Image 1 (tube, rainbow, N blue to C red):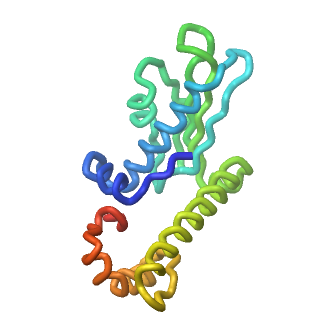
Image 2 (image 1 turned 90 degrees about the vertical axis):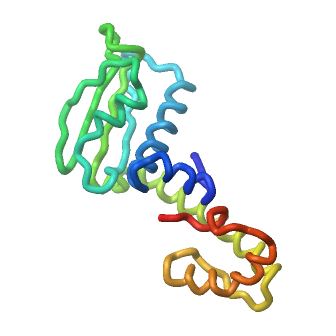
Image 3 (image 1 turned 45 degrees about the vertical axis):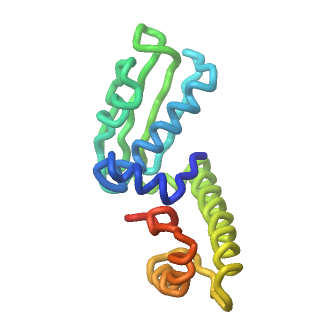
Length: 175
């Protein structure tokens, strides 16, 4: 798992063309890191399963940027699934990797578990965030961080935040 704090997220927004590209690049980099840690056998494929990123159907540029030294074969690109393959042991690179981007991908157990784990990690982070601010601001109601309530929370901590010299870009995502 790769947790991206608000400050880092905001920095990454400056070098990516929006939140979608940032999340795609972060996801692909995480996969590359994981693939570099395991031994891949040409006989047994490794299946990398993504939930689709918005309405995109074409992920070859993302994969080529992430894995520049391998030939990536397009199996299919479409609304329901975009699928790619590389490294079949025939000079295309190491191992045998299949990568799928699937609409409503969280209906598959690994993606559903990853989604639940991410939500749990977010809840833990929000607990720490709320604990910090509730120690600084009397009678502060905690926030889950969703847009409408986040505005209320931001207004209630504004004076203390300023007094502590904590800039917005450290604790608030820009998008």
